[in-house]
Length: 253
Image 1: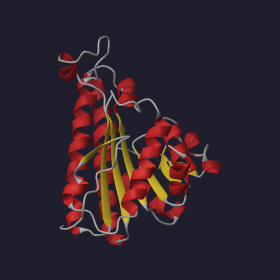
Image 2: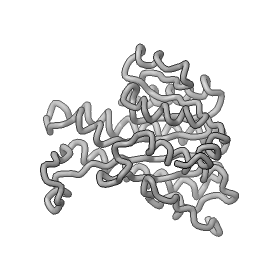
Image 3: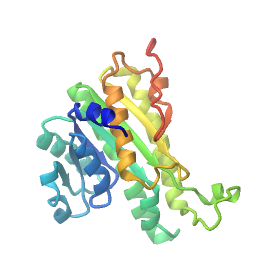
């Protein structure tokens, strides 16, 4: 990203909620968000991890991903710490989940569902309820860093690549379905904007969290400065990480 672009996104100060990559796994991404001038509130694997990064404008709390009450608590704590929320990012990093759920073991299914599906469902639902209570402008970005499934690799030329487990592949599909469903909510809410973003395994930015975060920041800033509310079609369009954000023309809702 060139210097002009960096100056541009540094001028927009935002308070950002980050869900999906618990600290310290999501530290590189969170640091890049903070470097753009954002205050970031996320989730952490432990209380010790949650307290490590406050000097960098990165705040966090622990949570129970299988609990709607806990998901609601994360949102309230974020608002309390940052005073308000301008943005929320739901980040499904399949490559990270592959290292946690490498095998399709029966004993891992329940934990896998909580970690990769329930947490996103509860937190996105609780966030939407909170958005409707406050009715203040907010942008929500769903980011999926994809990893090939066993089925996809049948016709792939990626020799030697270990496919994602069935648990991860199923959760990845569920996350995409959740994102698409959430995007339809802009039809009734002028105060809500949504961005859907995919980073495929073949994407040149796939292993560069800083670059992915830079693109995320630029995209959020673009949507935030749009003069017209989004259409459902705009909100529901999947964007390639690193590519131009598809904004179109907001003539009809």
